[in-house]
Length: 280
Image 1 (cartoon, rainbow, N blue to C red):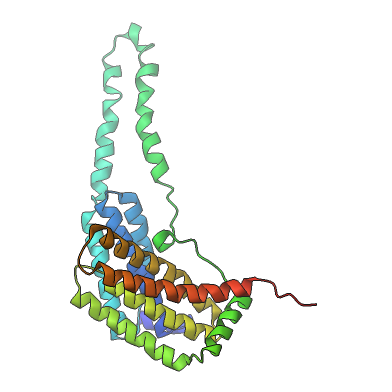
Image 2 (cartoon, rainbow, N blue to C red):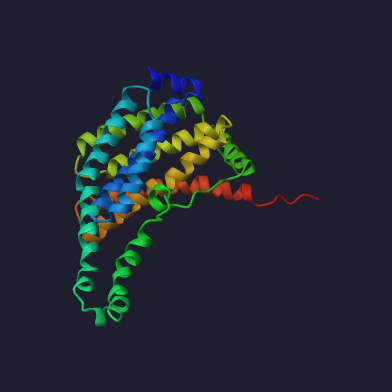
């Protein structure tokens, strides 16, 4: 009950906004899992915090949102399972600490004046190793530097879409269809998330066009930045499989080229909106 109250008292997110919030959480959780598998525990914990925040912000919605939350929770659980318990890490550092003063206690008084300075100097080394890892700033999922197109730039995108006679209601239906297809792809291709990402990219493009045509440029900007991360994921997997000569690699490259063409189309309009118009 408290969850529904918080959603209604602070602006109630739309279904599309909730899906976007949860999508960002899933990306953070996937990166946390990859970091945990690579042994980067601090980075994994930072990313899990981001995923947890997105999970908290993405409460409510329909069965599709609940399904996305379930996926997010599963990924977070897998990442946490690979992380060493924080108590174990503390115990390991505590176990190392007493070893430094031990030799000093048994040194004769005449030698004690000389031993402490050189003997304790190396003991500070472990602190120097751990210090750089602590202040790890939270980064955007996928590492893409967020863009902030201006209203004039989004206006150019709107002009282009109107020239193509894009209907926002139809594109909204397209987005719903691609989100549903993304969930099916997860079931049909459990060992790879490639086709899920392909469907996600198409859903995001549809939602971006709806947002632009309805004047919600903030939502359009959110989707535009997310599209970069998803396209990068699609490209790296498709090119990786082509290099290995795996079956189906060319089909995946074709899917990537289609995603790249969709993004280039929007990018072209944004660039046109960036150029100053020459007027006398």
